[in-house]
Image (cartoon, rainbow, N blue to C red):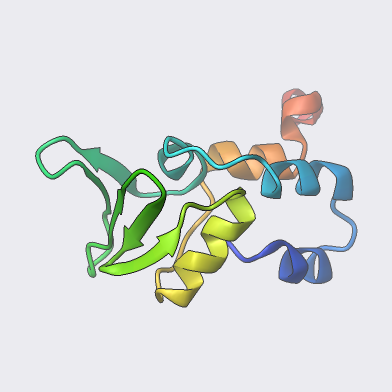
Length: 115
């Protein structure tokens, strides 16, 4: 599922549990979220950056207070939602991982076991 900022998500999916959606999107950003929340990303130890498996082979690397997406520099994102905005500004398409989709759709609260 394509990843979009929270404002768009809540408009497209008004029946989703808004509290859960807010918790995911406003989660304080950490580098490992790139692999955990988004499909197709891995950390490259050789180049010390995250690379996706798309045809474009997008790259993200971090400094102390900034980070770069395909050479464009941004202030360190405070939330997952800010990271999503920065990726959109860099023309990097993100897809939710299965883990993230389950968190957003609250499958981790018992619904998953009933399916």
